[in-house]
Length: 267
Image 1 (cartoon, rainbow, N blue to C red):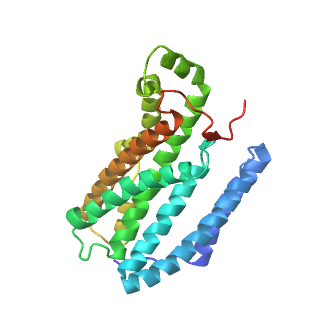
Image 2: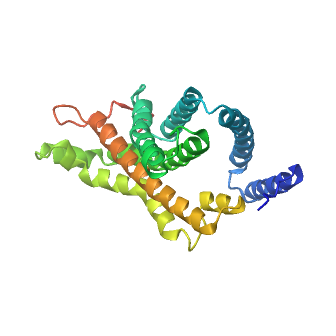
Image 3: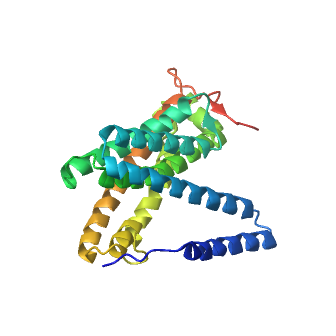
């Protein structure tokens, strides 16, 4: 099956729809028009640049180029998670925790998928490694960002309750347990909803792309099932790791709540 190429006119027409939405936002006072347009321009530039980079990467199949690309993706994802939080851990700790939680989860799951499940040889083949890691990092990033932001916000907003529990003799795990569990649910609900709706409400992106590229629908389905399971595992373990590490920074060794570690905290 021949893949239909898109012209500049096709992309421009799609962009016009976004401009129309931005104009509507301005008209009714949503205040989102600037962010919409900037995000649209940013996305276009980023995707065009990554297309050129991937063209070179796919042609070389160099392990070091793949690892360099993967590292850049991880560092940018870690920054995005850190930047989205209203109340952040001060210094570099918040960024390191965000990046580390995705390194532990997404990179481990991606490596297992490439070496055992997909079994591509060599395992770092960029046509498989980069798209797979990108999907895992993107979804893990959203889950970790949602959970981390809610954790620091909820701990701060309910600090009096947490401190009362600590005064009554509970340790930090018990005093913050309900909050931490709710935050973990917040981070994992999007991927759970995506799995529940896949194939009924929506056709996921990878499956759609493979079908448009001429692959058998059944083969596309198998890959999409694999990807959804991997994303769920990566997101879940990433959220669990981030919540644990952030929580340890909010309590000291004497079981006291320490909010001095948070920046942008205002009464």
